[in-house]
Amino acid sequence: MLQELRVTLTGVQLLFAFLLTVPFQQRFEELNDFSRILYVVVICLAATSTAVTLAPVITHRFLYTKHKKDVLLTLSDGLTKASFVLIGLTLAGALLLVIDMVLTHSSAAIIVGGITLVVIVLWAVVPTMLLRRHGDEPSEY
Image 1 (cartoon, rainbow, N blue to C red):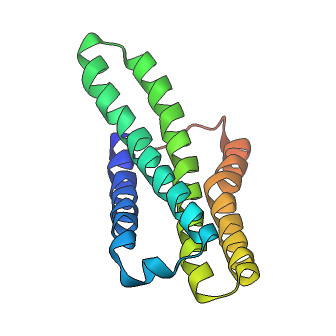
Image 2: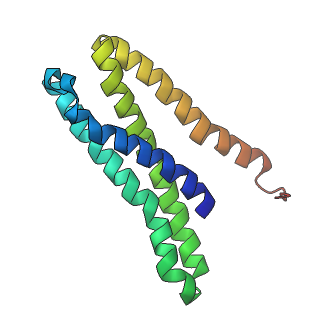
């Protein structure tokens, strides 16, 4: 699980870093009210994603030496799943912010909606289907 979080955290940090630079770009002044509000929502999602993605690692540091592996795994599993939801929302919001600057609102919504659907299928539907199909079978990890 910690290895998964290392990979995830890199992506979250890169997205967050990109978003932190946006207000310092010249075109930021051209944003309309919708885009400014969307930016604030997305940057808050990115900050929350970072905190939630780091939480299992920090919790591990506190609980590992106390031999609370069951508590640690249960909490970390929930936090990791929550971080994936937050990352997905951050990704969708960041895409909407950028694509809305290039195209019309409706075009941006359609494109981002399609990409969000792909993310939902890949991150939730496919794993759920595989778990239902192979959930009780032993795995050779």
